Image (tube, rainbow, N blue to C red; front, side):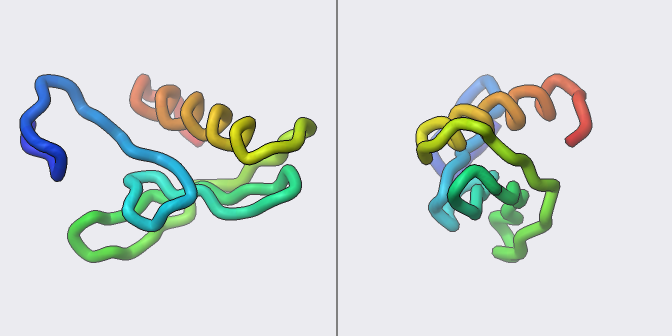
Length: 77
């Protein structure tokens, strides 16, 4: 599979607060929106939102990682 980071045998998804990621996280203070970034057109599509009862951007990133992995396994968001 060709990727913007080389050739990999597995699908690799990048996520985080940066607009260059495949999945973009926006929000703060426990309320976040997750977007799917179209790398070709640059358009963002809102996938959904989530709320966390624990503070910190690192916790939001961990929650996003579990969402991305779940969607890759076929779970809808």
